[in-house]
Length: 349
Image 1 (tube, rainbow, N blue to C red):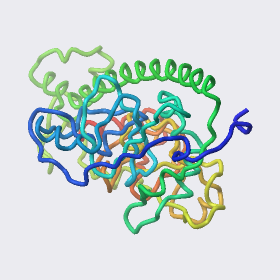
Image 2: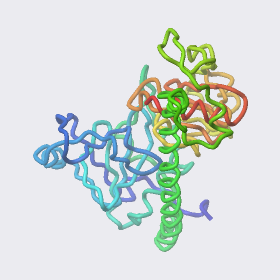
Image 3: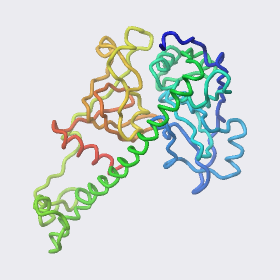
Image 4: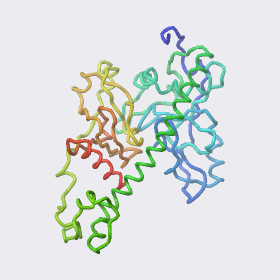
């Protein structure tokens, strides 16, 4: 059915591109969120760690580009092509290297726009128009309106947006529940393996408050080491001695045969997501063999080492390759060891 839909450019579909203010306002302790590239996560905006700006700066920075509900926020740099939708309950200013895509509703149902810019066709256009740089790939504002996509009839757009929106709401609720459990896991990890609370409790003759089989896994005293006091029987080590770190890479954009295959590939923006469940793009076996990227198994801890997501940690739920801004950290072979490594990395963020 999609093959029968007419294709048109974003410009012809009356989707406007609104560029950001190419400055950064000073930060303040409280105020309006200033959304930058790291706050685009899984198609949504997460303002929890965003810079805050005053009301005066908010007014100044939104004169040119004030996000409206259902606008699509598009990243042009670092993770070019990544998008998120403007929610109705969030007022924010647009950060540098982000632009707004806004449908006037004449040819594209505004609620459908967010789904148009997340599929294979979209990423094919990103690959077509991307500008490869020495440090960052990027998209030019002048070229984005030339993206050509299939446009279904308006009634079908409404139906698709309704179905996907309902499913997305359920996914978001599950994500929030999982994130809460993840926060509990991080706190538990810090208590057990950073602060050594069970060991301290046993050393002081107190009940560690754990089931006996778990409590018995912890020694009853601390001993000196080059790192300070650590549980007796444990040893200090470096991350490099215990894991293998695999740096990613990007197949040449000048070679069409390297792209559009069946092998998942992610950019550094994915490290900003709680779990990586879908790739940024797909590459071919030829692209894999011709570049420095490596295939990372599912449940690999990934760390962003450059760019706007520097230091962010995530866990892959899919087998995937990554670009040069991501390092995959491989620990033990068992699922428990891989999750331990991920939670441990996250506890030190």
